[in-house]
Structure formats: structure tokens, C-alpha cells
Image 1 (cartoon, one colour):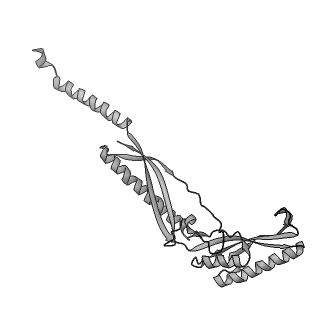
Image 2 (tube, rainbow, N blue to C red):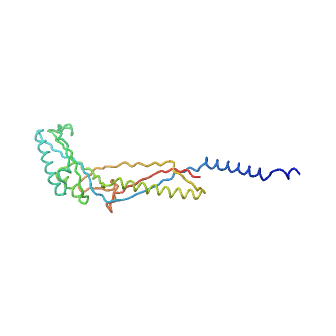
Length: 232
């Protein structure tokens, strides 16, 4: 019989090989693509703070206004020493003088203004420092910009934790879909702008806008990553 001499086994192996090639080709070229969100957060105690504020003096004579605002600057600098803030940690702008009517409609005389800023290495006395500045005539005292010395290291730690979180979520998805191989193809980081607010009155240091836990005083460094994977 001819069928007895037909190489069924040989051609069956060929067919199986072709089927496997088609299967592998389709598998490689049709990966599962997903995007997961990873969140990482680390905390550290604040080590220093920067404050900015203005001093204003109003007089009938422009020279008198300048003299008074400079005297106010000297008083502020002297007071800051009691908080451990030396002259090297204080900066001031040039005095600007404008007619008071240019600032407030109907006002007379002249107004002299100095913008100042300071860096303090102890964040435990910010409330009393802010109150003291207002008491010395400061206006528009900014919220303290808190920071740590090695912020980049903490940012990197938060990034790695976010990446680890994304990997864990991707692994769960891969397991549910019987995917054994996964590869990162894109990482997008959500950017959160730094927010600066202004104190409304003395003793009004609100930590909520500074990314600082009001209960622990720790600065939070957070990273949110959208990580895209291909899975086979």
C-alpha cells in the first residue's frame, strides 16, 4: 500500500515545526502591553529653612523714609542673632523709594522698601521667629522653605521605591496572564511643583503646603511613576 510508504512521521514533524515557528513569531510580535503606577515615599527631618519678607517705611521726605527702613533692617539683623542667624545668613536688596501715591491711591509722602531673606539652621523655632519678624515690622513673610542637606539621595530612594512598587504590580498582572517575561519600555514621572505660600499673620506657620507632616515635622519626598511593560 502506498500509504505505508508515505513518510507521515517526517511530514508531521515538519508541520509541527512550522506550527511552532508561527506560534513563537506571533508570541514575540504580540506582547501584552500594560502601564502600572508605582508610588514611593521617604521622610526625613527638616534641617534648615529659608524665609523671605519685606520691610517698609513711609515718610513725608524720601531721605527720611530711607533712613527709617535702614534702621529697621539693622534692628531685624540684631534680633535675628538671638535665633542663631548671623549676618552671613541674611541677605537684603537695595532700598527702593517710590511716591506713596503709586502704591496706595490718594496716599502722600514716600515709601521705602527693602526685601530680605534669611537661612536658619534650626527649624524648631520657626513660629517664634515669624512672630518676631512681624513684631519688628516685617510684611508679607513667606512660608519657610524647609529642606534637608542631602535631598537628592532621598529623591533617589523615593524613585527606587516607586519603581519597586510598579514592578510588584506588573508581576501580579503577568502572573494572572501567564506571562513569564516582562520588559520595561517606558518610565514617566509625575512632576509636582513646589508650592510657596504666604503667612497671613504672626504664628501662622502652616506645614500642610510644605509637604511636611504636621505631627512629626518630617519632610516627605514622594515619587509617582507610570511604568509601561511589554510581557510575553
